Amino acid sequence: MRVHFHGAAGEVTGSMHLVEAAGQRILLDCGMIQGGRAAEARNFDAFPFDPASIDALVVSHAHIDHIGRIPRLVWQGFRGPVYIQHAGAELLPVMLLDAASLAENDAERENRRRRPGEPEAMPLFTREDVQQVLEQVRPLPYGERRQILPGVEIAFRDAGHILGSSIVEVWADARKLVYSGDLGPHGTPILRDPEQVRDADLVVMEATYGDRNHRDRLDTIHEFGELLEQAWNGRGKVLIPAFAVGRSQELLYWFARHWDEWQLARWRIFLDSPMAAKVVAIYDRHQALFDADARGVWKGHPSPFRLPNLHITGSTAESMAINRIENGAIVIAGSGMANGGRILHHFRHGIDRRDTHVVFVGYQAEGTLGRRLVDGAKWVRIHGHDHRVNARIHTIGGLSAHTDQRGLIDWYEGFEGRPPLVLVHGEDRAREALAGELGERHGIDVRLARPGMVVEV
Image 1 (cartoon, one colour):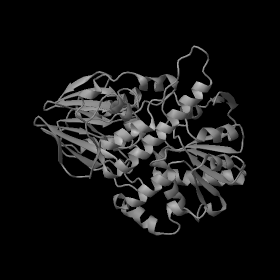
Image 2 (cartoon, rainbow, N blue to C red):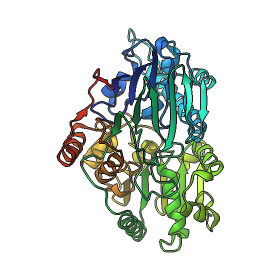
Image 3 (cartoon, rainbow, N blue to C red):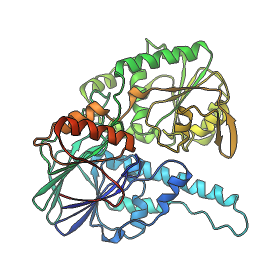
Image 4 (spheres, rainbow, N blue to C red):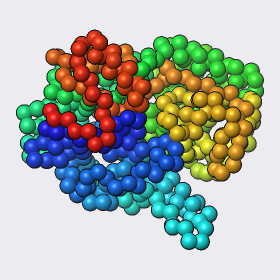
């Protein structure tokens, strides 16, 4: 078995790893690169392999940095099956169709501004490309070992990151590879904790937060409640960039849990996302994957997705109307890194106001608008116009859907015999810190994946 590392190898986005075994070629994830314009332009680069030579694609979960180049892979010749956990298979078309719509709209906008002689802008992929992908999807349940190709078997384990997220086990050539995908923290609401795997000949593990530990989640929730009280007393408005899958649902969960304590009935709450209603319906259909606490909250009153003052806005007109509300509103909108989507329109109307509170509740990749705001930018450019940042910027790091250094170490230490380890999906400072901790504890040589690196199992 041979593993080629092609994406998320020194950065957080763009996950893509190629496994050669038993005469087959299996791709683990095919994600979009996210960040600034230069980073995202790399999504148009040729794949470092012939897409038609890939026999199967195995997807860890339906976040766009793990699935966002699948339509391009198919468009360039991949015709094999796409394996993903059942709930992830329902989220995948929602995510890809939304990304296709954004890409088509961006290309159209660029072409309206195109000067004579400039090449026509093309979307990374279209909604028609997504339809071809969906014909190749083969959903699998958690815990079932399945032969997907001659001599190759896989199984999915619950990763606790988002609904349907998976740890991937791969057996071939009498060897076993375990790919963590993205691991959620222990005690994350709604989802079950990541499953432990005991044996492997090679572990490929994410390291997004390999250099730090999260705050206690209860302390974080207390801070969030205080922030809302501060915003209300200042007659403010709260803008929360959040991924449509995962973080948005967790926020609504906490709103339901603390409905009375935070006096949320006085607010107007908006989940401003065209895909929100679809994602909510998928979560509702898969409550069997929730942890025990979440199942109890869903049966209580108010239920997270049915808060009496929750408005799920689908149309552009409904979204624009939110900007006429100057205070007393909580707006959750994508994208989670503020690198596109409806949150930018809300920023345009509110980021220069001192009574606006912008709350970041997830990882902000280098090159994104979210990262610049978290780092203290005083001016930002949105849709071609410069805006002074007068809003109060808050980072609530304890709500991350990724586990921290402690959680990553604990998960790896669950393996018997301390198998070889390669770290992916992390900036170098995070991966180096985690490699140092694990090396010091166990005397193992931890490798940091680089683009083009090959590891024999």
